[in-house]
Length: 201
Length: 201
DNA sequence: GTTAAGTTGGACCAATTGGTTCAAAATGCA
DNA sequence: TGCATTTTGAACCAATTGGTCCAACTTAAC
Image (cartoon, rainbow over all chains, first blue to last red; front, top):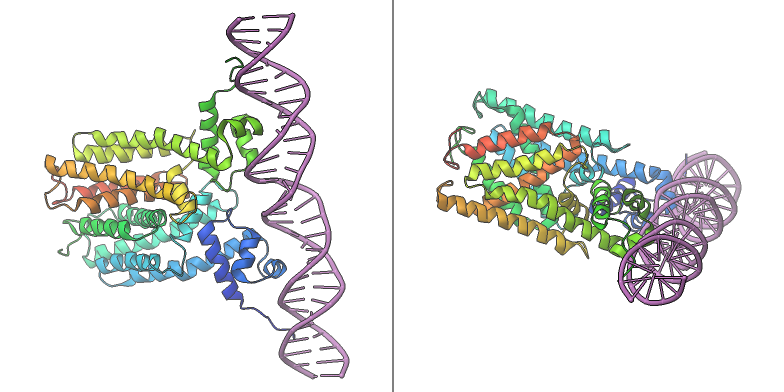
């Protein structure tokens, strides 16, 4: 084989991800994608397939990069650190002005919904995986003694999942992070109020 | 004046609201609107103006009907009842199968974002009004003795706002209400844990 | 019945949509 | 230098987009 790739495929993917993230699937046209990637339509087409294929690749890319980044924080040994690290990672990303507002996965869930023909299962799966990771972390906290033994871990995991989605929503809607910080503060205080968390404030 | 309106304008508005709610602004075409309202394109056009005008009318309609419905629950005299009534009204609506999943206002916030040319201010305004109402209710609870005097009401209001958005997001993403109920349960338990709320569980 | 006000479907529009094809150009290896 | 391979822009496509217009129709008051 000769003929060498003339563009950085992961860089193009990153550019495509950003307009999809910013404008949604339906709101993004091939013209937008061309502008954001610097590629021609045909290059785009035979590198990634059609628009929907490209979107899926972008969403995978997003999850791998930004989802994992937050999820990794859950590995902190103390539960409270895991939760605050998880949220703070997300909030720090909200403040990066080289990235669009909000969370692409949340946007995808909202734009398509569980009932969507081709994307419904993908959307549900993403939520399930995130919730399962949170649940596992809560259970660990219980055996660690960071959470009371009577804690309803399923409920706490669902709550944390909803909270992240809600923070992403208001960040995108307000365009800044102030209300997000307030909400996070209240949530952490509530989480720390006995008997839920045993650490003191 | 002679010549009589041959269609129910508020019924048409309701139909249009539902597809916009379900499919978003960009995802909805005139064809969809025609099918959902039963009107012709021209009737639609000179009754509501262009697509964006119609969308705005639908969003106002949504806020007036479904936003107010939940907000009205905040007038319950006891703070805990106000919050649970607020959330339960929302959750009951999630379970109505004659309505699309999720929350149209949340969808609008996510689809456009604060930076959107024509919709950004509308989106921000909606959040601000909702948050202001929650804040007012929290302050009342403080003077009522339902919340401790040292409560950070701004933070609690932001938290409640984020929570509703998060619940709407996971309802839409999962397509059912189970995780929503779990999350709400955990939240109420946390809210009731002393010293935040003085009622007992 | 005539008339004026209002509604309606369908024709029509230019622009854009997502998608496809292909000949020309560019590339690195032998 | 020539070759095999890949990339690329432009041309092209049918379909759909949001939007506009108007002649025909319906209605109610006179």
